Every structure is written in C-alpha cells, then in structure tokens.
Image (tube, rainbow, N blue to C red; front, side, top):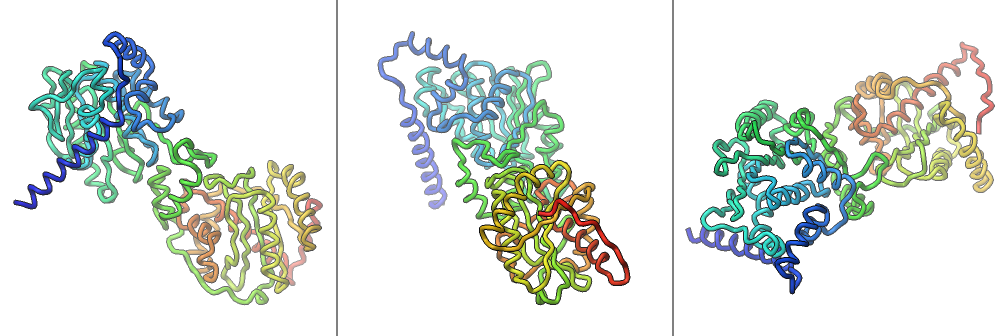
Length: 508
C-alpha cells in the first residue's frame, strides 16, 4: 500500500512539472488590454498557422511542411470529414491533430472529443497533452479563459469551463452514451490503434474493427457533422488503419523521405539525422515504421545461400553486369546503381562481388575498374551495362567519355558492352529466372563478402523482394541481367555450335 501511495505521489509530481513547463513556455505579453486581446484573437483565428505558432511555441518549433499545411487546411475546412494520416514517425501527426482539435474546440466549432487507442493507458497518454495545455498554457488561458473545471477533470475524461468534453477510451471498452449534454461526439480520434502482435492475428483485427465501427464510430450523430481522424502507419497488409483508409475522404501517406529520396520535412529531419537513425535498425523495421511499407522477409527468396567461391581461375569467364540507374544522387532514398561480378561454375551461379549504392556516374564506372582489378587476370571478365533505347543517348554521351577518361587516367584496359536486349516485366523476370535457382541452393552469395555493406544491401533486396516491388530491387534486377548474359554466352561458347554474333559497334 505504501508503495502504491509513493507511485501515485510521484505521478502527481511529474504531472505538475509537465504542466509547469508548459506554463513557463507560453508567457503572455504584458500590457495587453481586453480590446488588444480580442483584436489579436480575431486575427489569429483567421490565420490558423499563426494561431498554432502563437499558442504552441513549445511544440511548433519547426516550420510547417507543405503536407502539414494541406492536412490542417482539410481538417479545419470540412466539418464532416474522414481523414487517415499515415505519416512516418517524426512527422508529428498526433501533435498536428492536437493543434487542429484545440483550434476547433476553442473557437466553438466542435464540442465533444473522443479519443481511442489500442489500450486505455495508451489513450490516457495521448489525451495528456490536451489536458496539460488546457490546464497550464498561459496564452490559451489569457485569450480563451480558464479551462479547468471543478469535479470533471480526470486523466481519462474532463469537461472544460467552456463546455467542451474530452474522453479517452481503450479499444474494447464501452464508449456508449458519450454525450456532452445533448451533443454526441463530433470529433472522433483514433491513434496508435494497431499493434504488431495483433496484426499477426486476423481474428483480432476483425474484432477490433467491429468494435470501432459498432461501438466507437456509432457514438456520432447522424444529423450533425463529425470529424473523424485516424493517426497510424501501415504496419501490416491488413490492419485497422488500412481498413479505415478504404472509407476515408483522404488517406494521406507521407514517408520520412519522398520518392526522390529527400527528407519530407528537412527543416526538422536532416539527411544526416535520417541516415543515422535508420542505420541502427533493420531494413524491415525501417520500411514499416518510416516508409509505410510492411514487408516480410522471404516472401519470394525464402533463404539466402552463402558459400565459399571457388578459385576464380576455375571459372571459364565472369560477367560484370551494371545498371547505372538514372541521375547522380548520393541521397539514401534515391535509386541505387548496381554492378555485380558473377560467374557460373557447374550448375551454381556465384555472386562474387557486389557494388550497390547511390552515387555519381564516375563512382559507377570505378566499380567496373574495381572488379576488374579484383579478378586480376585470373580469368576473362566480360563487362556489360544495361542500355535500353531510352538509356542509349546517356550511354553514348556520358558513360563512353567517362570510361575513356578512366582508361587514360588509370592505365587500365576496360571495355563495357551495352546490353540492348529488351526486357520484360522486372518482377516476373526476377522471380522466374532467379527464384528456382535460389530455391535449389544454386544461387550462392560469397560468404567472404557477407559483412560488406554493398553485399548486405544486395542481400536485403533479395530478402525483401516481392512481386509488388514495394522495396527497391535494382540489385536482383542486375543479377538477373548478368545471369541471362552468362547463359547466352555459355551457349555461344559451346564448341559443337558455331554461333558468330556481330561485333557491337557501341562497345566502350
């Protein structure tokens, strides 16, 4: 009992400190008359972004990104609205929703807010910033009056002096009868509703979804406009967030990086910070938590086979195949350039060396040279580069001069042939040509390169490959291209078959 009292006392002290920090961080200008306050309040309410920055300086530390502005505008402009925000971690989805809800409540547009989360404790934590700001934010109090009421002020449910009700509910609990006098809930918030463990059980997901639809959502009024907002990432193919998105007026998906590999909120999350954060977790976790991409390892390539590569002199020849990828971008989210050294011995395809990264075109050409020097004449190496019709002008105007420059500067003999064979659908090619090879243990990755960052990226791309191509597959695509060249050249070199291909005039 004594321990319980001590815990409760500590919790009260922590809460008081939390509210006191908000109080200190929201000082009000001295000398403001009632008229000054009313004039400024009218201006701020007409300029919502300035309203947020003024009343929440401790939260709104960074400029809003464009996606923040668009979402805030949608939420305050549509009294009847259903929004799902699948924003990556570190993009402030719950905080932005709090700004919007407090704006709507304090300006009298909404009266009854219900918040649901996976558990009662989670809902309590999510409601805490609302309660703390209504208790201690000096600017809100100066402009809108004291909000804390007597007798209706707990960590799970409270009603402000202005008559606005807030209630936090854990999934599965009873929200029925959640009226604020005659007002049914006109703001329904759902935040962190899905959990990893529950998403592994479709029966639980179905049960939670039924609770949301039949118990939580059904508390709203049919005749009065209601704002419904979900905050949650797509952590599984079937989860409640995905189901909610199917009904939403807007499903806003924003990842930590955009499709070009740049930070979506650079004012807060720099490339260096993103790189450092993602380097400390697995690719699977990074994709789920920061890119709304719940992928499972081994969907197609169920196991990765590592083994010892025989002496290079035992190979009749090796293929060094490269895919240049468009552009010159070292950003970690851009398309990856790839250059894979591989060889066929017996019935096994060995992945001997890999280069797979973002980089400049000069870096890409250097990878060919690095692999040539690695082989060091132990067996012939044929160098190829993917070169479809769209790529050919770049091949002629950029890569040929770069190769010529590298030959002169490094004194090395290097010839790269363009692979101009038309290619069919990427995912289908990779699965059809490489999955059987891998399943039979005949696709072997060099165990000596297991810890090399480039080889790790290649293995990741194989492990996370799906037919939907929701994760980059530049490396597997490169291996498939090289394997096709190996098979064609093996047939061409058979002594019993006389096949003479024309010399390609486009060789570098």
